[in-house]
Length: 356
Image (tube, rainbow, N blue to C red; front, side, top):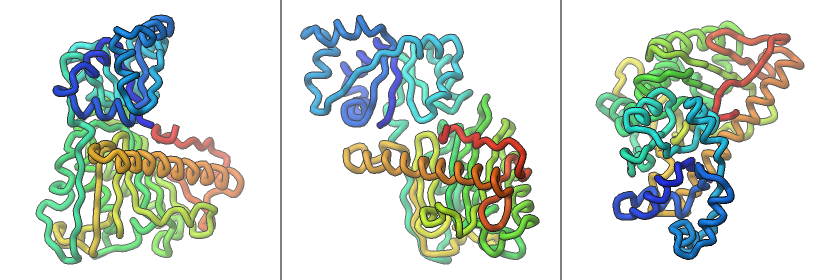
């Protein structure tokens, strides 16, 4: 379920303006959990009043919707605005000026609306492409990911067991592609740490400490060169014998409001000619409600995002457990934080806020 935190007056205005905000109304009616800035006693009296808009809303909707009150949450938000990071996949409608809402969204990577500025299309963006091997795509990932230029986000998880398996002219193809993907997905500015978690297999090509060290260093240095704000960069190398290996076949991207997948590999483009594809493949990256016209498709995307992040959390927890018990090794896991390997005896904590 998708959560909307809203000022009560803004919410009432939204549900009264279907023609102006058809997409938000469909999201509210079919897919959202609603948390309102109001007292429970006030909410109870209004949802029982047959002439009140909240009563009419609840009784005109085919889905059973529970409106929740959470005055303390909103008090915390208004006293400390980055509290919105506590629920990084939620959207907020707050009693702020337009400039305040825009700044909060830019600072946190969380979608923030206000009474004077509501973007009805922000969660409908998407990319869905198929290509053949040796096909030319001008500007490669920059072209493909254009709809998500400077799109709000503060965290991303990338799962691809084959990501770093191949080199071309002694350059790792996966590192090159991931840096270009992130270069086109990361917001331009941010006032909080951006969290990146990459989970990939220790292939024969990476199954030794020095190779993993090199990949972690290249990624850490390359990512930090993309933007001026700070990062928490986590890389988990897992071995084929770990408990969760059988669940790592899919190539996936999870971010605050996006779900992406590749049928072959995210290492999609060559090194010597950056616009030429390596394999037949299909790639999609969609925001949660890209297919809002289909309630079942939308629910499936929300479920896929939830299941994928839950699986990443299980892998991360198993990694922490195995390293605490056995240390980093080429049988189970190696874990890198900001370019440095974390070893047995050091405190290990998975930072990515999508998992916490």
